[in-house]
Length: 164
Image (cartoon, rainbow, N blue to C red; front, side, top):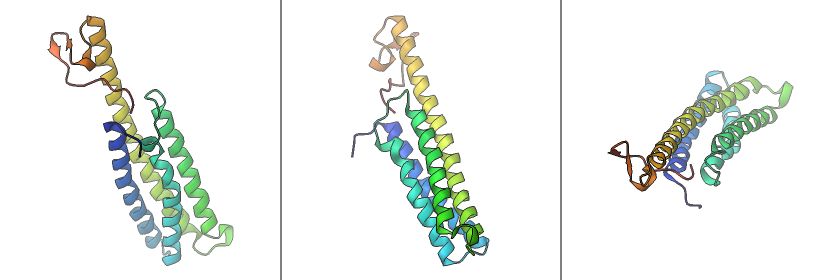
């Protein structure tokens, strides 16, 4: 496993929890719509297969500048994979449990997208604040915020971050 910074590790762990919640939501929605065991299993397979894309930004070293784009790309691709698999597993147009599988899968994928987006915004905002603190520290001529130098007369509490 590649070495991950705190932000990437936090993202991966939070998305693991969100994935488990999405699986539960998807199965619950499917069951509430009258889907049987086959529908629930199809929802789990579609969400689980698509969810491997969720963890790419946490596992693959992506530079700080492109990490948000990586999250966006993986999230959009995951949604398409989940919906495509749900459609295929539900029997397509004529499948008896098409609606519970499709709505359950879309519910789980939607939850993942919402959590992933909110988490990425928080982490990217944190990185931008660290970058700005580092720039201010360099402009002052001190050791820089990342090196523990003073910024405007006070010590920095946020180190500079190289990678997400």
